[in-house]
Image 1 (cartoon, rainbow, N blue to C red):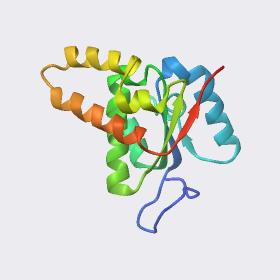
Image 2 (image 1 turned 60 degrees about the horizontal axis):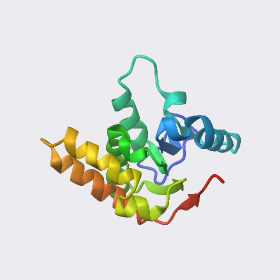
Image 3 (image 1 turned 120 degrees about the vertical axis):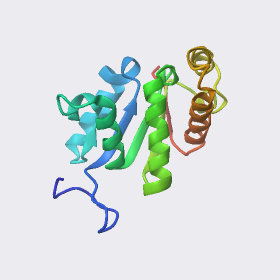
Length: 163
């Protein structure tokens, strides 16, 4: 554990200030990379999956641990975010950590209107049509993803549009 890690209380030490949740194909080489560099330049310890993963570790376990060790989660909700079951599982974990450990969620609606996420229309509707086909044996999971997206979309955040 880094001795300079931030801490909400003396009982819990945080390894990261910020955990970045994003759909790689949408924002990794653009907005997310720029945000990561800016945070790093300000001395903000930030977890970004391609930067902090220890080689040889299971990606899913490493990501879940990083979420638990973060004070904030910046969730970059982009057009294809909901098409990734992994992004949705990650988001469920983020919300669980909000409830259990006080993780603060900061949503960024990147080239997507917050109402599209909240109401699950357009690309979000298309993503859930596919999820309902692939996860028809586990509709409870799909319903959890839907509810979690609505919860995060109802949080105060930022709406960014590339023009």
